[in-house]
Image (cartoon, rainbow, N blue to C red; front, side, top):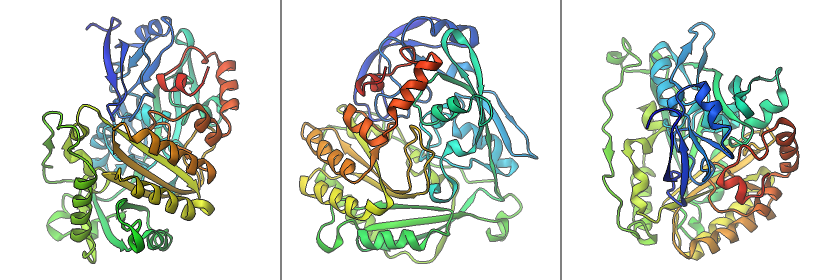
Length: 449
């Protein structure tokens, strides 16, 4: 398909549910992008790693990958400038050999920079380093009729704040500048701390606040005194002197990574409570006895699932839903206990459950708040929506909210009550000309203009 042309095709998010027929635009330059914006409601789609329907618009989904992959990097200041369709993998390939790394990274390196800004992506270091938007210096935002605005804390500041976490509803992010962080090697120092239950996991997080990175795997099927047992993984960028002597001469060289591929959709039901229970028991047994500090490469620490290409196919054609919530710090212990109890009682075990500590949020439509965030993957079944509706009620009762980048089914009430400032966001969209023009399947479901 030539640039500027369009076609209709089925699209889904990374969770592969829902799948929607969309008119797809593939512009290859600014003029073609402006032309796309005159054809009706549109939404930008980067690498397609949002889990649900936030990057889907039946009347016009704009693929940004064809808009260029330019990367400029200042090795003195550590400022990286790039097109929005550039991925974290592209950025790391360019900057890491020069001694620089992204200040915040999500759990896969295949997210686009534009997508990370739109979702205000967070990583394992939010408690100390904030979200991705905290390290964005400026971006160029394309609005109605192709009009470009430079947005930064000093230029168009309200639009800058609203776009970070705004899920593409203020315009198309065209290019951006990010401040990177210096590192001495491509290796990480990691320690695993077992926690017998959820209370012990909270204690382990609190004892690890001095570590730059921390994240916990949670066993959602454990019960009784072991409810919420966890493995906390905490880490730091390793210095050159921490490497074995034979690696110090080339601290950014890594052995080739073995990447397997899921070649086809697995049978529906392969991932179920029984296989989840078996996996959790084996994973706990293998890792809870580990002691000391390990030296692992950054790929294994930040992007373990990238070692299995197309892993979302494990859930079969029905796909899966990721459910990610955050609860304020004062309500986290009680609320997360209740969430885990409901999940265990349902029998619908999550195959992947991750707990992280968050610092202060940015406000606006950005997801993070000071507290704990829990992310869960559930195979899609007819019983799942009822469980998730119950979890929504618990989250709202405890002052929390759900992550828009992971959502595929929450109600407008859950969104508007959880974020609390949607009305202000909608006012800004109307005043900037974005309302009605930039819309996704998600935003329409949630009652945005």
